[in-house]
Length: 259
Length: 260
Image 1 (cartoon, rainbow over the protein chains, first blue to last red):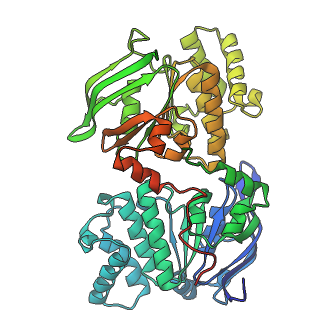
Image 2: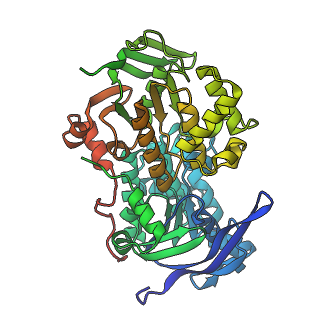
Image 3: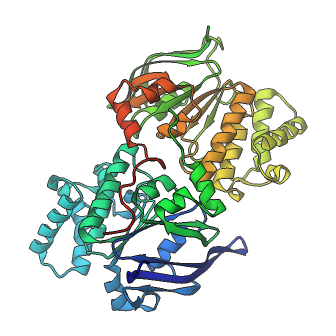
């Protein structure tokens, strides 16, 4: 895009799953790229393939075909130590943070894990890093000793963001990361994500079924339907002039305040 | 003169030491669509359960709910239909859809099995189930989330209740299916002249079809009134904050064209 070297280039990604004796096409030759510091919104109805796509980029599942180049490296060919090292550079935040943490862990413990696994810091260095991470996501240092299940949903999602930041990633995949939050908290977490991106130049893939939320944070939007990317372009253009039937349906389905 | 279906006075609900609702005064008017708006912990679902008489045993309840029109305590399922966020657990997984909805009609409308099946087929058509004949003989797991919510609506309205309580009925669905289900509910309520109590965290969703809105926060009503008044001229600061936190396609984006 626009002469920038893409951070990630996905080409022709395909995936089918077995279901009820037949096969379901989850991804059908999906191609896109994303630049450093950019947010790509991935929007589509349930079952359109957006979560499958996100999980392939995280190397949680393998595609049947296609390629992914990340920072010039063939991401799908990585194994062992090189794959583990790469995992530090591509992080994730999911919808339900309680399910994404060991529920008995403390906030500090949850942040210590990635620092221990990916960093080369001693105990004291990690403690300083944890304090820094909490401050960056707007959480009070006194929360460090609290259990994950004791804090509020909004605080928990901030801890999930802090954990993703711990390894200094180039890309964070956010899968419905604000969908379970109360409205008043949701706006604050979105603003936090945008601020962090401005400071660090992190790229985001922001997966959601809610086009209005995606539009608030995405530079470009890709619309998915039945495993295919049916439309991709600058956020404003896609919202103002959708070309695909799915894009039009998603736009008309956004609840509007009727005053 | 608007008739009152249910009159809630000084309702309070506690679970152990935690207050869930306190000092609730609210009338549900016959034939209206009343939206209860609130965030997590506001007490909105507890209100729905209290009105339906479905509070768990450990809940301590004070105050009164009167049903002047019925003249007796409402019978859940017969006088009140209930829709939950997730329709899955409402169905028995080993019985067909037809058996389960026909049973409601048999029990509450005193129909024979043959008539009850006929009636169920008619209900499945009314909730616009694709291939209603097949749906009658299918099992709950064979349907998508959106279709299961259509089936749950058919079951909830089977006994022709006066009041339908819908607690976040579309929160687990994507926005496109959500719009379809809301359109369906809206039409059915109008046709049948039912009263709707719609519980949601989404004030914009409620703004599309509610006659009145009551805003809940921390177990209390912060304001209630005609939907157009509450939305255009909120009196409580909390309501104004909820309205300001709404994001739709007219909200200014947090990022501009391209990354710096």
